[in-house]
Image 1 (cartoon, rainbow, N blue to C red):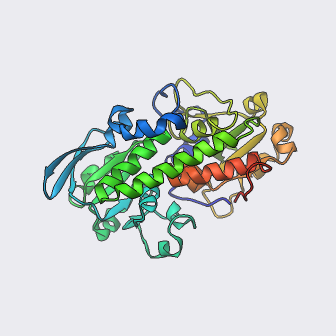
Image 2 (spheres, rainbow, N blue to C red):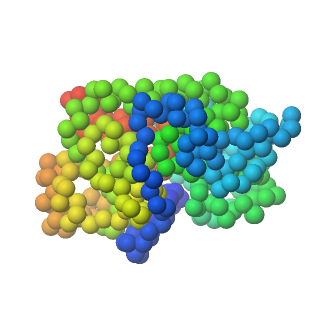
Image 3 (cartoon, rainbow, N blue to C red):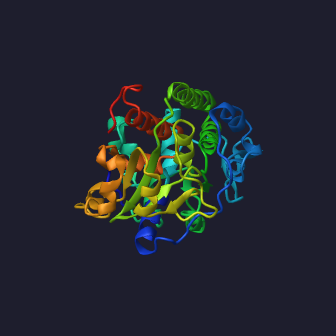
Length: 355
């Protein structure tokens, strides 16, 4: 199903940029290589020794019996309570990780993944919603939630630090790989005293990857395409979700030398170039900016090139939940992505429904 979002995360921003200037880049130079399930457990355990984003997600040192000093992905040093209890989420990796730990956020953005059934169920209806825009959330709403810490996304919420100074520390997260997602989960687990829950969620996720890798026929190519109003980009094998799928099924979309999409590994694209590779199955993340917006697949229907794709001819198009696929980034969201993707690609092997 496609969830209409006004606060969709980095891809939300990129979708607007794609509409305005398809070739405008918004990411950093993509790091080469991608993680494997075999080394993810050890790599995440040694998060401080991995990428700069992962190192920045690690706790630094204890400042006092009542406070801990931590460093975020920007290098900012923050003082948090010895045990963090109240977390406000401006980004979905925060919501995802809290759900994995059996905890609840004190505030979320509207249309958060918190409202998807796999996360908090009916309890989400009582969550405080932060008004304003995604890049300029209401500081008043955040203050009312009285958080111990506010978690935002690098490249999006960095400029909020001064405004939040009198409210709560702002921790900026950066996620490029699923190893980063695991490391962030462990970091929040250490803040909240939920290390055991973090370890269990981590292992469940890694076991899921290993199981799919072992059982996957690994013979059908896939593509993740995102956008709005027939202007679109793709997740390459250098993106978080693209690199994950590439471990389980052919994903013939090399990472660009420089990023031009919603995050590391995303890039603007054309139907002509998609047709050159002609994938077996296409997953679509539609960004909707009005109630009457059509799914991107329906918008493409008028383009003759769209009808030439074998995925279109064979009805191998899946409109996915943009909130989870594009913005979740955490271990629970990525687990849902795997379940939905593998069920769609290999229905005879992996029984299940794709929403």
